[in-house]
Image 1 (spheres, rainbow over the protein chains, first blue to last red):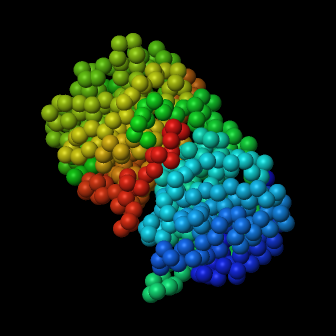
Image 2: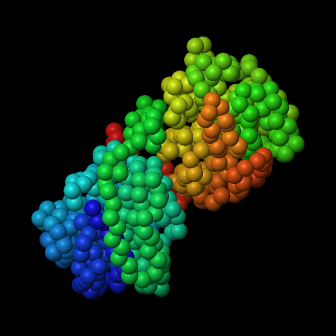
Image 3: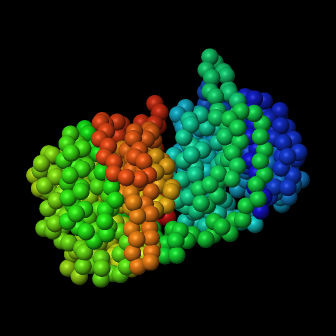
Length: 266
Length: 266
């Protein structure tokens, strides 16, 4: 199974241009991928200044330009494609990750842990956190700051996820190393697709750290992009490695958990 | 508040000698500490070859030589002292961490996740995982391989632990870096007291990685020992930094958790 991330610098509000960039990079550089991950909010950019801005740039899924673009990539490349978007649902707008399969079927995940001003611009998700079948394997989705909460990867792992797709717009420096621990403690693959560049708007500036990466169940980094620029990596993985939860001859990650000791506190 | 780890290489089965080493190092090099952490099974060594060996070397707590030794250090230095021991309780023997306060009062934690052959030599703990008051702060205990399970630090954090004491006999290379993530994702201090050296018995050899360390709530390593040899570090920390669970102006680690989304899966 070939998995890919696409790292680039979306331009704020230029949805058509961002979708074109994503499609071009996918078709030119990830043609042999079975699973492709794009950054969080890759079609809109990140630095909204108000809820109404986020609402105005949001789209239904499926049925909007971003969903259509993901579906085109999925169909053209016969791959599952995951990307972050501002998802409109009635009067609500979510920071979501959309997954589209080659046959056009789809899944959506709404970010469980909103970061900073996202709390003002996006609605709070009411879940679920749920592993899904795609690309011949079992896939989990989480978004950016969800990495801070080990519960997210754990819940996905307990549901059988072998590959965790992680669209991100990371600004803090910790996640790439922490994702190695997420991978190791769950014995799963992770694909972090982070954006690069900066958003500058309304006298504010946010810079993103790039460093998109793929990690393996033993915590190794299979590939990591530089901090800046456009980068597409395609990595061959064997998801069966994430099926095997043995840590030693006598330790199995899932069997060794002690939920009865963790109790109501988690 | 001054916290310390004591790293050394216990000799297998030489309980009196190991206790003397620990007491000497504590009195000579950790005299100004308020909280001292010794390695897992520091009084017996690690590489048991049978359950009966572990049973024969185990002691009641309090009331055995190891408990007495911890109590002497605690009383002499006016410090809380945590150390790992083979704890006998009736016909059972646990891989435990014992904590003794200067006034002789005590706590015990029994390892929740046994590693490899420990499953044959030690009894399975029936808990609890519980934060306790000591050294003027709120303290958690976990032992070695417990690091692999993010639930342990999380449960302790939810109970208010600010400093997590982590006696260890680490043989795998991942824990020192992973403990930075434990620290960060819970915004707590951690003190890993690992042993150095090797146990060689019955044609087998196990080498331990040293690298005892203290980490801060922002994930930084405040001090880390070399891989080999005896090392005592005393580090001044402000446990109030672990009381503050703010990640950003709008994100609080504990308030941002979404247990209703994690559901029964944790």
